[in-house]
Image (cartoon, rainbow, N blue to C red):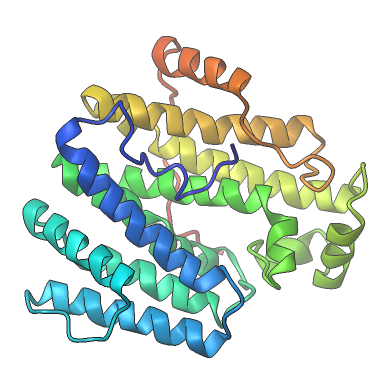
Length: 297
C-alpha cells in the first residue's frame, strides 16, 4: 500500500474499540467521498464545484440541527444521515468538515503553492481535520493533543506529496512550494518533463528538492509522534503504526535516490512486520525540537 492521508485514516481497524468503528467508517466515507468529488471521474469543474457546494450546505444544515434542505442523491443522503447520527452521538464539531470541503474546493482552482506558508494552510484544511475528528471521538482534545495530531496529519500528507509528484503532475498540480523549486533552480516545465521521462537517476537539482521535502515531512511526523505514545490503548497502537508507516516511506524514498518516478515507494507485507516491531518494541521517537506548523518563510 501507499501512504495516503485518507487511506491511513484507521478505517474500522480491529485495533479500534468496536463501539467507535461505525463512527470511523462514517467519517471516512465523508472524507473519501468529498475527495473523490474533487478528483475522480470525468466531471467538469463546474459540476464538481456544485456537488461540493451541496455537501457544504448539507454539513451546515447538520451543524444547525435542521433537516438537510439541499437536494442530494440517494447514496449521498444515506451518507449524510449516518454522518448526522455520528455527529450528534459524539458531539463532533462542524468546522473540521467545512475545512475539508474548503480544501477540496480549492483543488478545483489552485494548482500550485507559492511557499511553505501557503502549502501548510492547505494541509491545515485538507489533512488536519481528519485527526481532529478522531481525537474528538476518543475525548483527547487538549491543546497539545490537537497540535501534535496536526503535525502527524500534515506530515502524512507531505509524505503523500513526496510519493505522488508524478501523479499530481498528471492532474496539472504541484504540491512542492514554488520557492523551494526556485531555490534549487528547478522549473515547473522541467519538473513536468522529469515526470514524463521517468529517468532511473533523477538530476541532482531534483534530488535536492526532494530531500528538502522529505526532511520537512519527517520533522512534522517526529514533532507529532509523542501523541502516539501518549494516547492509551488500541488507538495509540494504531497511531504508532501510522506514524512509522510514513517514516518508512520516507526511508524508501531516500534509499531510492529521492526518485519516486523510477520506483514509487509503497509499503509491502514485509514492511508490515517491520512496522509492527517498531511500533511495539522500539522506544518512542524523541524529536529534537518542535516544528511550528506555520513556517515563517
